[in-house]
Image (tube, rainbow, N blue to C red):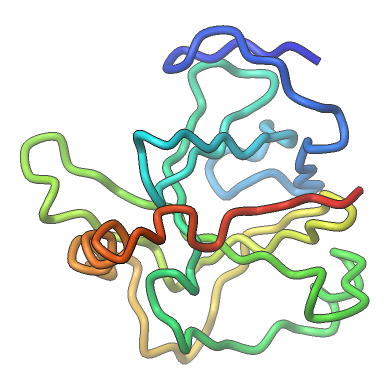
Length: 161
């Protein structure tokens, strides 16, 4: 299927790679279908592109690429909602904020990760309560380390649907 994007032009996306957010994303509830776009030039930062709205494109990063021991509990309700059958089904990303005037101030929302069932494409953003992380978790040094280590594809999604 072809999708239009403001940032990357027209792209061909396999239907099986489309992520479905049955509840949308907070603040973007009407956007329910997204694709993860990966480009070598953006390193470990990937893009969550709306399939229907070319203007909606969020930078994301694998939460575990940023914090190796990142951990939180997923409610039984969310496990059922996402159809998670095993830990291997789970891919977790965080939305990134990249300030225009100071890339060193780049942060990730580690308190509201997006949980993706890479087997089925079901996805949901959840809010973690009682977390040591923050909405603006500094990630610039972690990104630099990933690039130095040559691990720019850390946490890349492979959807088996």
